[in-house]
Image (cartoon, rainbow, N blue to C red; front, side, top):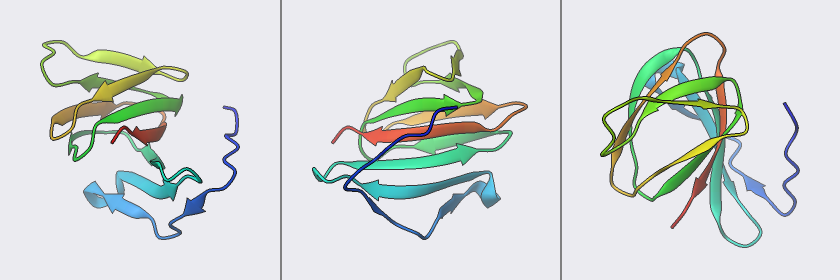
Length: 107
């Protein structure tokens, strides 16, 4: 896995902990005002809701996602991404190694 260099970034040092610790992330504010989060999902099957539209970039591990309007699960691995519309729900399943991600908020 390659490191990501993010200059001009403000990091919220307090972690966002969801689903009894099965998903942990940190919020970032970029120099241009855009928002992102970086995190990890441990092996589990979870249902997430979005406020803003998101692009989830996989930077390590893999997962399966069931996106709104799609009838089949999609496999996502390192170097790939998927998008979720605003005000939607999606399912994610991680088996084996943790899923490491960068969430790009598209608002």
